[in-house]
Length: 451
Ligand SMILES: Cc1cc2nc3c(=O)[nH]c(=O)nc-3n(C[C@H](O)[C@H](O)[C@H](O)COP(=O)(O)O)c2cc1C
Ligand code: SF4
Image (cartoon, rainbow, N blue to C red; front, side, top):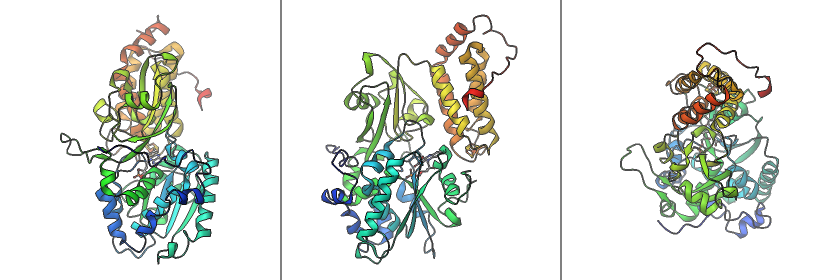
């Protein structure tokens, strides 16, 4: 692997890094100039396919391949939605890019729109990001003023308009069809698929939805080439025929009980230990690590003795997690009780479930009630079996839920119960010494305080 040189965060920290002036002084808008009108859109898409770029929004779907799902020779319009909702707890990599280098994101978006024959794009940003909004809006205005957006951009015969849209502040606005519904002015209820957005998306037209960091990577593929991109990261696991490899630089959000929390750029495949030690300055107050979430709250949990886990698209799955997710690593030290982590995660998902699917709506709220009761010292050992059962029936029964939120809610439950069962049993016995063995029903506690 070649020596790693950060590119996504290269401008962060420079004075006025968010302006067009600084962006262009550091080589900005050269990649898009190489592409527009000079390379055919389908060849741009082929190059992205050849780079092995996988979406950074959570699922890791190959970006170039996703673009080829658009109908060929469609009379249009085709829409491109940039997913800047970023509501996964622990995740703030998109925010850093949008606040500190908004032109980098716009350049990647321009190339992606050109490749997909899209002339109208929507930039969907969560409303909780006022600074990112201000700087992105300013960057878009700067682009229109310079002829980089609008008609015949960069002097080519390609025209593109970008509309900045603020989301309403719900986790489900980040799910791609929830995003599209919200964009259309409706409640962000995910749509049943198929049809997938590539066939019928925004305003019932073919639509591509890509994440902010994915778009930023596209820009660098055309600045530095496919070989450069593929020289970073890890090739496919020969034992896993479904692994497409994990190539390119990646932003990791490191938070929780560490000395230097922040957003860091490293190659895909870095281990949790290296991320914590080399970038995060170790665990705070000299304490011991207990666990971490490898990629946002919906991915499940790694124990401290699993910190050799590589953070690529394939790595966390080998340790019983759902996947790499958004690569947001939340570290917990030895003082954290797993009952608190589980209760908070269940409460989050129950609050954010849109309520369309029964397993998700009822399962997440049932898990929250049980965990609140356990936390309050009224738990029974059999509640843990009940929780495990809920973890199995929300989400993993294929086809029972419309979107992936239910899977994301099930994973922390399932693998924490597997990995920390002893601690949870001990908590129940300690806090409810007379009643833990009781198999009689226990009345639910009032949950008024949690919503
Ligand atoms: C409940 C839920 C929330 C999601 N939130 C986000 C989000 O905030 N940002 C994002 O880019 N993708 C999010 N996704 C993934 C998107 O649906 C979609 O896969 C992604 O935006 C595609 O972009 P990519 O291919 O560039 O990764 C979410 C998915 C689910 C199921
Ligand atoms: S899985 Fe949950 S969040 Fe997703 S559509 Fe169904 S109820 Fe809504």
